[in-house]
Image (tube, rainbow, N blue to C red; front, side, top):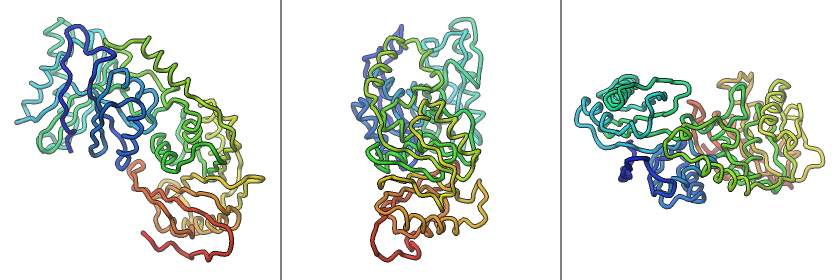
Length: 408
C-alpha cells in the first residue's frame, strides 16, 4: 500500500524549512496500532492526521516533529518526504531522485545511506532501486559541487528511505532518526526472545497501567515491559537515552530548539510510588533485566525476585496488574507449554483475586489453559511471529473456573 499523498512543502533556497514552518511527515507504526499512535501524536502537537496501514500522515510544525521524535513511545520511524508520485516505467526512478535538490540537505564531505522497501514487479529486490537513488544523489552532488559524498551504512549523516508499491507509487523521504525508534538506549544486550521496546510500550498503553497500583511481570526476562511501563508512568521521554539522530545533521536543525524540546519534555516527569516486581525462574534473565534497568536509571523502582511463576505469591501486595510475555515455545524451548500455562492459571486463581492480567503469547492453545475468559484481545506481530495480547479480570469468591477458554 502506498503512502497517501499530501502536498510537500516548497523548499527554500538556503534551508529546507524553518522551525515554525508547517510541514507534513509520515509516522510508521506497528500494524494495528494506528489509532493509538494517532492519539499520541495529537497529544504531542499534530495539527492533522490521516491514518493509513502501518503509517500515518501528519501535519504540524517542524518543532512539533522534534517533540514527537523525543517523546513518542509508539512510533517506529518518522519520515519527511522529499519526492513522491507514480513511476510510469522503471527508468523514471533515477530522474525523480536526481531532481531532488540534495545539495540543500547534504554536504559533499558528509555520508549517506539509502534504505528501500520495495513491493514492485519492476524490481525483484530492494538493493537495485536503492542503488539507483544512490547513483542519482551522487551524480547530482558531483555536478553541483565537483565532489561526491561517501556511503556509510552504519552511521550516515543523512538516511534516505525509498518506498515503491506494486502500482509504481513511490516515496523518497528523509529518515528523521536514521534507525528504528525502538532503540531507546538502555538495552545493551539482547536476551532470549526479547520483546521490542515499541511493542512493549503499546502493551503498556493498552493495559491502562499508569502507576496507581502495583505491577508484576512474573516472566520478566530482560525487563523491557517493566522498564517501558515505568518510563511511561513517570513521563520519561522515550528518546532520553537514544543514540544521536540523523536530524542533528540537517541544515535547518537548531541545537537551541532541541534543548528546548528536551527541557519541556523533562518538565512533565513525575514520581512513581507503587510497587513494581520483576520475577523470573532464570537468574541469568534477572541479571540482564537488572542491567537494563540500571542503564535506564530505574533499578531502584523494581523489586527483583527469582521464582517460578507457578509458585510466586507477592508478599503484602494489594491487587494490581500483571503484565507479562511468558514463553510460548517458538524461540525458548518449553517441554510442556500448555501445562505451564495451566499451572500458572491455577496459581492466579488461588492467589491473585481481583488482579488485572495481561498476557502476550504466540500460542493460542496455551493461552486457553490459563482458565479465564478474556475480556480484550489484540493481535500484533513480534519479530515474524503473530502474537495475541489478552486481558483477563481475575475474581475472588466461588465463581466456577472454566476449564478452558473456548474462544479463539
